[in-house]
Amino acid sequence: MRILHILPRMFLGCGTSTSVFSAIEAMKEKGHNLYLMSSFIDEYYKNKLSKLGISYSLAPLSQYRKNIISFLKSILYIKVVILREKIEIVHSHHRWNCLIGTICAKLTHIKSITSDHVILYGKKYLSFWADGIITDSNYNKKHLVEYFHIPENKIEIVYPLIERERYGKLIDSSFKINNAMNEFDKFKTENTLLVGQMARLSAEKGQIYFLEVIKEVLKDFNNVKFLFLGEGNLKHALIEKAKDMMLAENVYFLGLKKNIYSFLAVLDIFVISSKIEGFCISASEAILAGIPIIATKTGGLPEQIIDGETGFLIEYGDKKSLRDRLLLLLCNKELRKRMGERGRQYLLKKYSYEKIAENLEEKYNFFLKDIKIE
Image 1 (tube, rainbow, N blue to C red):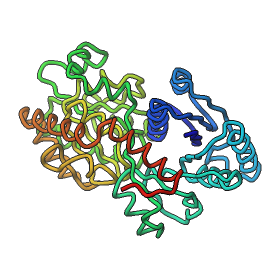
Image 2: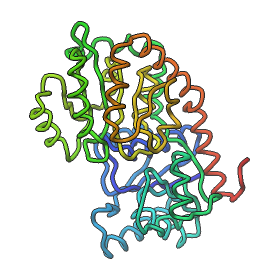
Image 3: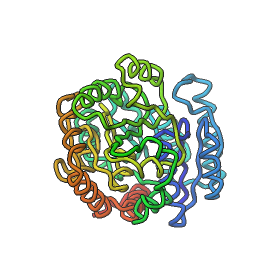
């Protein structure tokens, strides 16, 4: 197959970027031809794409610059690439690009797919004009059917992949031993436990109410530090709020890191406090690292976590439940170890890299040939 991915921007710290690159990598491994178009690609992903031998080019695809000129330019650029590279499937990401990609596919008489990465609302029906839709969880599929009234047989579920290199390192039995000495060791003083999060620092990720929970937790268990990995428009406000709450000695905002292994290697507990998620890649990475997880009951997270067995699920904004679950894990080393191992085995069995990559290839074939896969 010859597949063209189009997305607005590709940069470190973006979940969609991770998902798209991992899909490209997996299909490249299987012998397919891939091409990428975006309005911006950072050096991190330029280097990764180059190492894979993936061609890419820039087009005015940013969803923040919607106008008739950029719209027509994008269609022209993409149409040229489709014809030159003999593309068979256009796979678009984000609503504006989905519309552009689908139009280009119609004009060149090829197949179009759009990915639904998160729960969407509003009048966005043209975003789902494509021949097929790939979504990342049963929760999201149900939403597309019930809210947008999209025919169920037009939607296929493919769970997001973790990059091959990351996946391989995280499932290595010596993962934590090999990362025992790293830049985060300075936080791990004697008897100190570390709670971590990897997420964009923005309103929908719930860090504001998480800080309020941290304040309550520290009243009962003060030998713990909370590490936030990520950037975002709320970073300054969160830092100031932590200072105002007198949390500066226990809460640290560490920015973006290319190497997540050292971070995951030192953590005792992982927390996701989001209001909205798809199938959460950072959750899968933490679970594969054997870290017990507490997460909000949204998106694909209930499919990744068995509540009470491989982790804990709570409602978004339920500060009491988050506090109670945190204290339970902080005070019980055996429970942390048991949940971490159960979560790891569950993910390896149900969501292995090989299974997901095979499923993605099957879905491409299904949409390309219009043959239903049983």
